[in-house]
Length: 190
Image 1 (cartoon, rainbow, N blue to C red):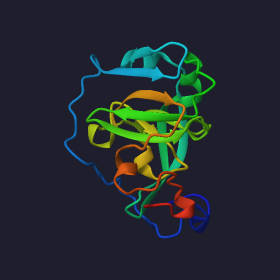
Image 2: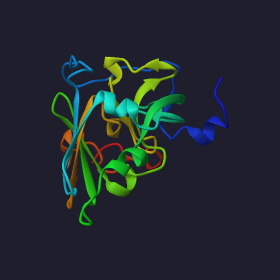
Image 3: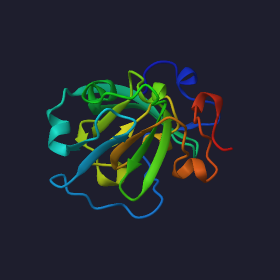
Image 4: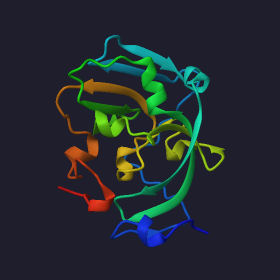
């Protein structure tokens, strides 16, 4: 069953589920790990590109976090494995003007975050969920997981980071979703 006090772990307006619903806009991309690429560009000292194998060769971490969807479900105690964003960013030197990141995903998906939120100590590029490789439907081979924000900020099928001086709205943010997305403040929509 769930650990800790459920009331303290479930934001107002959410219901708990043991399932992991699949919610996606548009078709699920078919991705090959051998040709998958991840680009880092924008306000960085040097634009870089990474392969899936290079991600696997980076230090691996495990975190446990709760996952809150704007459609009002919460799944507690998710075990994620992958690369800590803090560890990944050791490969990147940001320009001092980089205040925001636009996260890109296959299928032309984007979501935006302030750099300070992106660099939180529990943000992770996950390839494994609850001990199994992340399925394509849930964003495999690699998705961003931002536990302190609603799930649309945890972009599926990530393939790039664009660092910016000014905030640029992502896909859902342009279509009526709250730019900050804090589930504890019920920041669901505009």
